[in-house]
Figure (cartoon, rainbow, N blue to C red):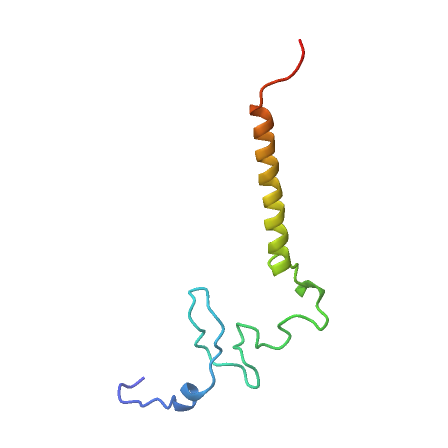
Length: 97
């Protein structure tokens, strides 16, 4: 390569970028696959992605408002039960000898 060679990278730099989050937290700077929003490494390649009707993509609901409220209610009940057991443990015995 000659030092006086001028590269024409204008079209490459103007192409839409992937934008997927990388492990470092920044946006991917690779060019997106034509007609797609992601690059070939982040799901733009042919055959990538989940199949139609994917059963593996079901959500478990553990972090819904209802799920969080249920866990808080259970925690409150367990705390009350612990306090009751501690109170019963510290109460004087009324057993007959």
